[in-house]
Image (tube, rainbow, N blue to C red; front, side):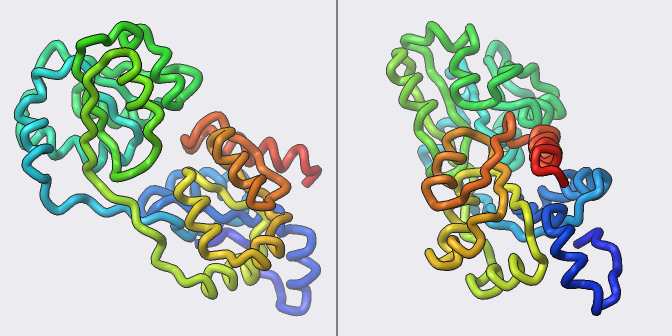
Length: 274
């Protein structure tokens, strides 16, 4: 789990005092942290993992969603809001459509999500710079959508910005939730002990839900205790939320991809003088 060097016990307190900024906690869901973990280790960081979000597929689709899949060729736009939407949703679509319907516009919020869709043989539209709902909404095919049908593949809950804006543009928008988010399988006491014992200097958060779950695990006095810990977050919105919770060192990555998160981590390290 960690790439920390072995240090004799008597030297450990001094070693940690000088190296805690290199101790990184990656909080992606189980099974989705390995690539970022390996990249961070290769860059010289001491890496730990503790998922702050669990993902669970829906066991069975309700009748309304089964009908959406049957009617998939009646939509003009199919939007996947994340890589998890592809991981959990594309199988449902393939069950009904072994060959995807033609003349549909397939969208991904970011490059990693687009790559997952492309691996299924789809031509994908995705923003090149602003990998967010806002960047997606700026794509030309989504400007004039009055009277057109849009299907948004997503998890249960989450932000509604994309849906609301498309509705305002006159589209008929349906949601297709295909998985649910659950709190992490870790107790508050265990999580606090991990932060303390691992001397975590930087926590990498990939989503607002991960931050919410972390704050739920930290009582107010514990949040204050760890407020000097730096956070790497994927958006301005999440950064504001973290700052309002009391964290003083918050670095905003360009997006939630491994490349962007690692780049933000390295920039923070350079700026902190470590």
